[in-house]
Length: 101
Image (cartoon, rainbow, N blue to C red):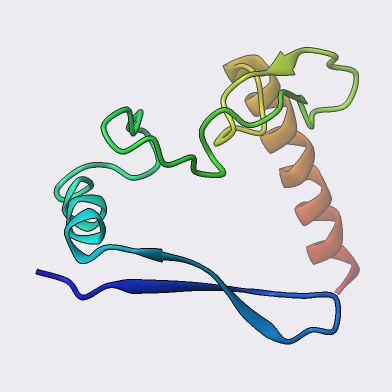
């Protein structure tokens, strides 16, 4: 059993003000709901807690000349082809840097 949890947030002056108290029973349920689960991939439908990696905004693939939008917040590159192009470009840059030294 976890004790009651007090939630504080800063006000306009930067001082912490108590905004809510989460009861101990609810805090225990929130704590143990993620036990033995992948926190980056699970849906968190049981607790209704919103995490930054889930439901995040779409973003553009970081590879040059690629305009594909990526839905998964954990990824930066859209496909294996883009990943291969990026790795090859980075290898070439690394070779040039080693030759200059």
